[in-house]
Length: 205
Image (cartoon, rainbow, N blue to C red; front, side):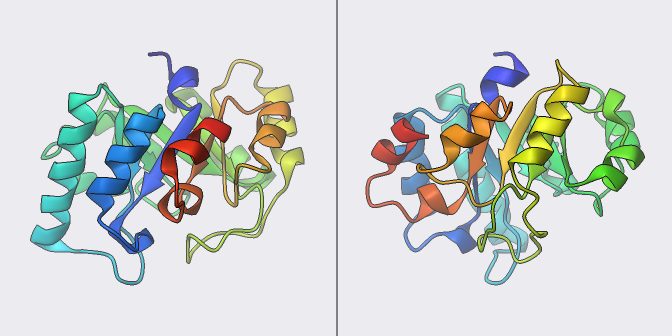
């Protein structure tokens, strides 16, 4: 699967985002047609240590069984133990240069929210950009202010072939706007973790 294709319906989740078993939610999401999964066990209420590793292994095995690419968010110590397909980092995490040196064959995604971050980011070393937050979001405690659809339009204009996934505040109601602005896909957390009917939500993204 090409990077642009795997970004189309990109699901991000940690146990802190769930009111029910994350294993069940991921199972439903896979059945519903997600194209990639990112394990993001971070923030208030997140698991640590052995509990985090145990959940990570369960979710990794499910993705492996269904050929769904598996990413981790910033947890570099989990790269080898979970044999991940990719790593997503923010501007304040380990540098892309260091990650690329250590893991030359992994898919690397980087969050870029504005012109200043873009200028400082090694675009040539990453495989895709997480652009946003597109809309206001409550799913991430460390989320930045919303940058709107214009940021995706700007990135697409400057980098016509760069894989871009929109992040932040994306729902079934606004996902189409993100794609129309030039993104290759949308990433969601609460749109899926809080859904009564996960498959239905994914079909509308």
